[in-house]
Length: 257
Image (tube, rainbow, N blue to C red):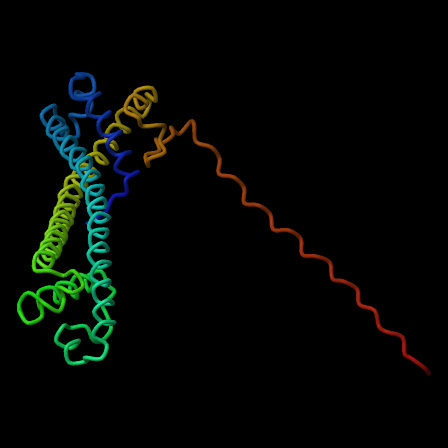
């Protein structure tokens, strides 16, 4: 399916709306375009397609803006969660540096995952592990990670995960809006190109009327045929330039005889 750029859609909406508005209630225009099968009812149906296409186009922008705003908010929440998590990690690693076994139980050995998804995954695994194993609670409480604090951090992670899910829903909605819009825009485009061609034909001798339809001259493809009396003689082909004269060559004088 053809994908229309914003500028192309705006031009289509401007032209189609002017064409329909100046046609549907104009008996003179309706009479002229009837030879191509266009009627007032058909123009009203095309106007409905135009309204739908423009409406879908206008719906797209707020969703894109909301998606971007939500993305920024989610990223900040993730960074806030991860910053505090890493503070606990570093404190516990220093306090328990001589107890490798306990560091292993606390999931504090090895490199951390610094990706957006990894930040949440590592923090969630650490807090959940502490809550699931009561023997670890007194150890992490020494750095301020009480049961209440662990539960609070888990709730913040759940909030982030819900935000990411909401963002995914917005992405799907935006994709569906784009798909629906492109179908309606393509239908309107095909109709308008045919109707525009008909208007250019029936008003080929009335440039002012074409201007009213926002059709300027014949630049969009139709060139009216000239009458036999107006035809110009085909231009003579340009003469080929004379080939350049050969450059005389000089024979070097013999050196020494």
